[in-house]
Every structure is written in C-alpha cells, then in structure tokens.
Image (cartoon, rainbow, N blue to C red; front, side, top):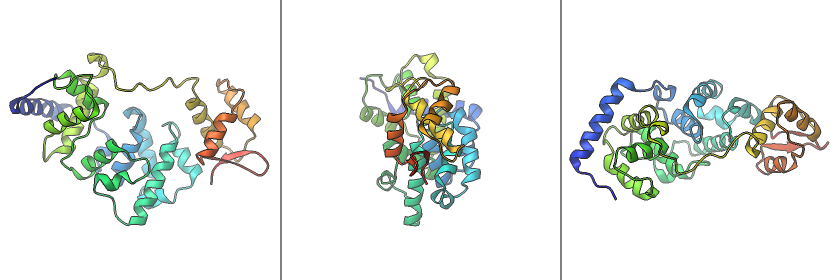
Length: 272
C-alpha cells in the first residue's frame, strides 16, 4: 500500500502543472473541445498512438465535419478515411454512436448516457466528459497509471478500482481538462515506459502476421475496389508480402461484423 498527504497532492499538482505550462504538446483535438471533436479523438486514440492519430483526425474531420455528416457516412468512404488506424470496427461503432446522438437530438452529458453509445466504455465515457465539458472527474489511461506508479503514489499490483481512487484524490478540481492533458504529456514525455520500465496492464499482440493484419489489409484492398473474388484477394495480399493462402475465416469474421458483404456472384465488397 502507498500513502500520501494533502500536501503531497498539492505539491505533485504544482510540479506537473508547472512542467506542463512549458512543455504541453500541440495536438489538434486540444484546439477545439467541442463534444463531437472530442468523441472522434477519444475513439481514435483507443489502442492507437498519438502520432498515427493526428493526420487521420484532421482528415476525418475534413471529410465528416459534423456529427450529422458522420451519421450519414457511406461505409466505403468511412473505412477509406479510417484506413491506417486499425481496428476498423471502431469506425463503424463511431458512426453508430453518431446516429444515436442525432436521434436523441442532444449530446449525452452523463457517464450513464455515454455508456449507452456504441463503442463507448468506462474510460471513454469519462474522458469525453473531462475533455468536452471539463467535468470534475478522474480517468486513468496507460500514461496516467504509469505516472502515479512512478511518482510513488500507486503500485503496479493495484487493480483498476484502487487506481481510480488515487486518481480521484489527485484530481485538480476546476481544471480537469488541463490536469488530464498535463498528466498524459508528463507520462508520454517524462515518465514514459522507456524511462520507468513500468509495463502496461495489457500488452497489444504482435501485428505482423496476425489476423488483425490480414483483416486490415482486406478492408484497405476492398475500399480501393468494386468487388473481388477470394482468389483475387489472396493475390493482392501475397503481393503485399502477407502470406495468407486461406482467408475464409477472416472473411467470415468481416461478414459477421457487416464490414464486408458477399455479392450474388460470390464476390466480396465493402458493405453498403
């Protein structure tokens, strides 16, 4: 167990915020904290590095500047813009969430309402309220967890509820948005995984040679085509150095998730 005093909390808050005032990252989603922009950025940032998200975020908002435009988005165009971020289901869930919000005619403003949106879990619901509305809530991502541990206020063995309690105690009330941005920057630039050697709770599986790589490649190939046969898909995959001789299981997954559909002629295309 770890312990800390109110003085420890105030000293740490001052240390982090003083550092952040000089070293804050210039990220596009921090320039406009409108709820829609925050929703898009938070879904994109799930399991994806910041440097990969930045150009895609800008491209996405150029293509779908409003939540209404996203709700009406064509699947093929949506996946084309999303290509490169991985986990294509997130794009579909984001569009579904947009449809839900448009139907309600108002953006959700509670954790419970946000959790009802497709693809929005416990962390994302809190982060949306923090970054869009500056709500006095605490959220713990990989960077924040590492900062709390490296600073001596938490341990690697702590469960999510214990970490949440500590994050609540250290919340800089009235400046929740700034506080979380500061902690994330501090965890990315100062107390990062390389300098602290603190491992994340979950490790992302290897991408190269994985089913995830094949899924992503198939979606990308189909967004650039009208329809393709299974053999044509395999030829494209092999030409990219992805040795995959039987794509049936992957295609079955994509069909079940309605990312891909089979035509009457037995060919494959991005779902309408």
